Image 1 (cartoon, rainbow, N blue to C red):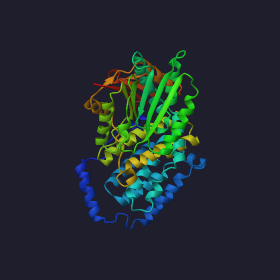
Image 2: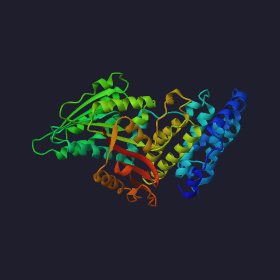
Image 3: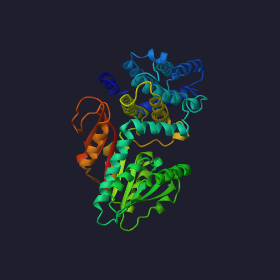
Image 4: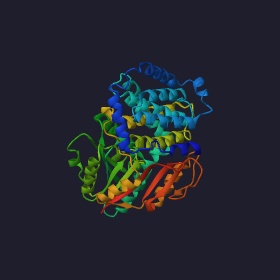
Length: 458
């Protein structure tokens, strides 16, 4: 994304405050009991243009290769304002024009705008429309899993999160070696197929000498029995590669009301609590508080957190829209650094992973599937919440930073380590040291994507 497009993104969407927006919407709802009534022709035209947009043949992508990013972003912002104010006629026309100007095989601006257009179209039509579910159609479990694996493989996004958290856990384990009987217990509040843990197993096995085995016990919480069973099978199988590692796994459903009662620690073991991409997924802030109180009661040696950066949970739709647009524009732009334009993996990631997140972020009020929006906040907000629950930050070691830099050196557009206040210049992925070394962030150009930090109980 170039400087002109970034400047346009920084423009304010509306001149009024949230109260003015609420009054405008109420007046429009009063005037239009059925806002889509009489607009069937425009809706049909919109859907026709969307169908054309979904075509990914090369002849269509070539028609857009020169790009028209500034106009698309401007039109998208105007459309968002129209949708927010329930200006149905104008919004339908603008959405049709957006679909006409984007391609799933276009540049990063066209691609990200296409999914935001879908989110706005669904929000405008509302759940009462027979076309809502078509636009909001979710990927199958297999498609979602495949897109996650593709992103994990080609981008440093998830690898940065897992490797940084694991390095902090390893160092905590080493600090306790005189009292932990070479035993580590990881409590993972969102096991997410267990992809984080093979690298930890390998690191622990390398520290075992002679007949002194290292014991690793993982307690993991998953969303389904199938996920838990597959995770256990995968990790147990992988652990057999290491003769000097004793491994045990115990899984629980996140939905189990008594799950926290099972969080028991053994005497003389290092306990690490893993909150990677977990806190933001909880339904509300009271559940976040409840989780942190439980974690504190366990008195772990270390708590590791990794969360996406942003302020995408404000009540104002336009504020949430702008923050989401900033964030996902960076994510789509970064994929161009990882995969060629014609890549089927890129299309899968954008459609079934990032695109799904964009549409749900804009529509969780309209759909019971998305009643609870993820709580995306900036590092400073998470820091205040952790400190208010009795935790203090731990300075991350130089090994964590060096490891993150080495990970990025495998990427084409690698840029050196950046510090707060140092813009650095240039493009590509960057590592930022923040909060006096108590957190590090992965960024794209100068936009933070996610931040990792480590904590201990006061």
